[in-house]
Image (cartoon, rainbow, N blue to C red; front, side, top):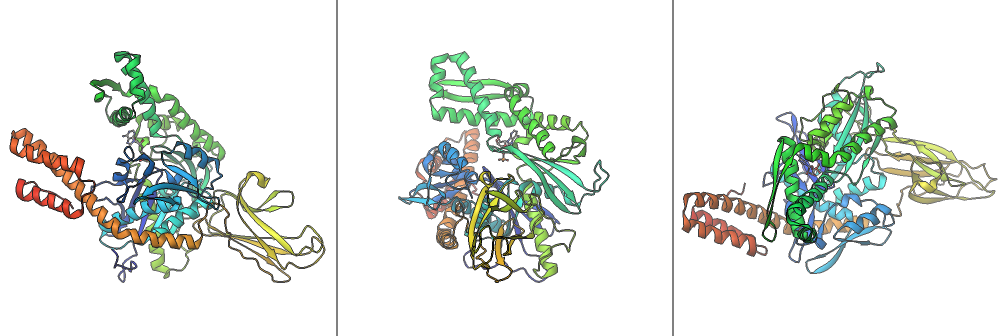
Amino acid sequence: MENMSVNEPAKGELETVIGIDLGTTFSCVAVWDEAAGRPIVLTNSTGAKTMPSYVSFTDQARVVGQPAKSQAASNPANTVYDVKRIIGRSWNDQVVRDDAKSFPFRVVDGGNGRPKVEVSWLGAKKQMAPEEVSAMVLVELKRVAEKALGKACTAAVITVPAHFNDQQRQATKDAGRIAGLDVRRIINEPTAAALAYGLHGKKDTMDSGIAGSNVVIFDLGGGTFDVSVLSMEGGVFEVKATGGDTHLGGEDFDNNMVDWAVAEFEKIHGAGRANKLKSNARAIRRLRTACENAKRSVSSAPTTTLEVESLLDDADLSIELSREKFESLNDELFTRCINTVTTVLKDASLTIGDVTDVVLVGGSTRVPALQDRLKALFGGRIELCRSINPDEAVAVGAAVQGHILAAGDARTGGADLAGTTDLLLLDVTPLSLGIELEGREMSVLIKRNTTIPCRKSRSYTTVEDWQTSIDVVVYEGERRSVDTCNKLGEFTITGVERARKGEPKVEVTFALDANGILAVTAQDTVTGAKAGAEIKAKDGRLSADEIDKMVQDAEKHRAQDDELADKMTMQTALEGAVYSALSAARTKGDTDQVAALENVRDWLDYDSTNATLTEMTAKADFLRNNLGVAVNTD
Ligand code: AMP
């Protein structure tokens, strides 16, 4: 892809703007299919539509996605995941401190108040900003899109949780830049999910009689839970309220199942062996995987068998799991989820009757009991929007937004479309933005839930006689005192009119762009003095130089990544071919073929880690030419 340049669409053809759901545990990329007139989710070379947001580093290389997740157990200190939990946060943030404790990889103070992850890569210690790690995931998604579409993809819409603040959005945008993407828009995940269902085109009437709709987005993934209420009127979505739990998801269901399975194991094998099981990390890992699979099974079948061969030494585990049992194990968590919906509706000052649509997002919303409880909450009045795969709805919506932007650009030649089209969809600012006044009081310029892009100015003055400079300290938050708000940055305006206190007039302007990113300026209306407006966020934000360096680094690794990606594709193809040929040869009783294939299987399992692409290709040729086995690398 190196020698391809900007994605110049042919005349009459719309530019391709890919939609990316950059998730905590999984990511997904989609695009608008012009020919089909609808969005499609793009698959990687193994046919997967979602990719674990994992990056794993070794002495030889770096891998991203499923191959990285597969290394999490064998290479825990250098396999990085969940960076979305720390991106755009400062080192002093309690969330970072708490998460850092539970990660098996190191998170350190990277200087300038920012956290960095520390891994050993190519034989050396390397510290990386969360943006850099996210960029690696984005590069892989970009590659998936380019391979699937057969052309360079440089423009993207990326989604973030509705509760992300300015710095978290900025950092996500920076990650995109490092990955070589032109991030056209950062949009809220719930808004994307609503777009995926075409709810922006729907003309509903609320109980109040006003045309519009109120949409509840229920997003339960592997490790995070978000509930948002959006109101839509005239093609504009507003986030009315959000809630949830950043540490609740399908993994908690799995944990409850593991505890139950261990207790069942104890009934059969006694406390001594159960204790041994609990302290055997590998056995517990295998048990957790089996539990997750059983959980998925009881979403579609009434019962399943939870089975692990030789779980501990020669002791097998085989227990029946019914859907009822699964539900009783997790009943309390389900109740917590449903109660959150009630609370968020209350925060949005809406009643159950005001809700027009409920959208399911995230793999864990496949649990039938949760769907039943949600339906019951709305009195059976609402059909849940669940026709789109819940793992893909956010990326699909991002692709719809990408298409809307591309279509808008085609019509206006790239000019801003604000207010000129019914297709334009706007988000709102999740938190109020303002500056600190004397007495540490917060003076709000842009109120929470204001539709963006927007611009607000307010006049301020001095608090002392002959004061010629003013510190402008910018905060976001909902409290009256800045002590409990989040500081975004500060600057000083000098050259203010020399006068008695209260006389000078300094106009402060906040400009919030369509991505929810803020620029602040201050100007004295008499002297004309103007302050450097760019907020240099003290914590959390990378500098332009740092980003440039990371862009160069990312490019340097691209060639290496390309080879590695081809190698991974080849490895997967070889594995698929060998395992299916082995089973066919065993059925046939062809012992020579079985022995030859087992040889290749062992090489793949034990000796192929450091193999080059040429060696892998040679193995594929051997399978094709000597053993008559087809190897499909498409
Ligand atoms: P996400 O991060 O949105 O992809 O969600 C992944 C979570 O969804 C994981 O915890 C999965 O175990 C869970 N999940 C996926 N499919 C199912 C299913 N059929 N039933 C229950 N949970 C599922």
